[in-house]
Length: 78
Image 1 (spheres, rainbow, N blue to C red):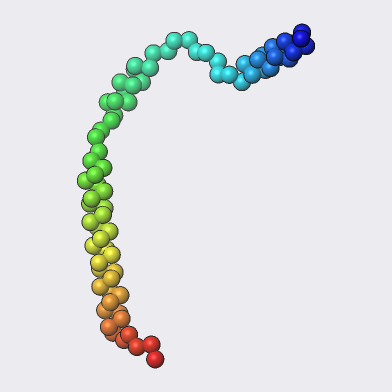
Image 2 (image 1 turned 180 degrees about the vertical axis):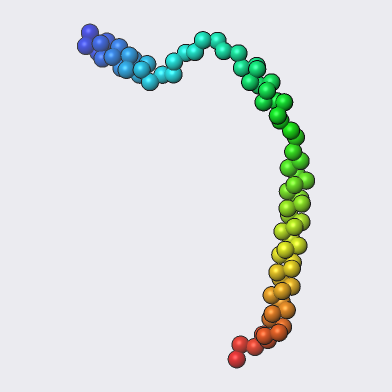
């Protein structure tokens, strides 16, 4: 029984070596306030719509280009 208690205590002691050390009270409000000053709202939805529209235009242009190449070369496989 005593051996099991000593093994359990050794396991607890070794596990505590890997536990993060407790830090004294540090105020993070200054860092938060500074970070919030630099924060700016971004309209992600608007940016995504703009990118989507540009991609669709490029795709349409590429499709038109490929279709004109097919018409010029011909669609015959003989």
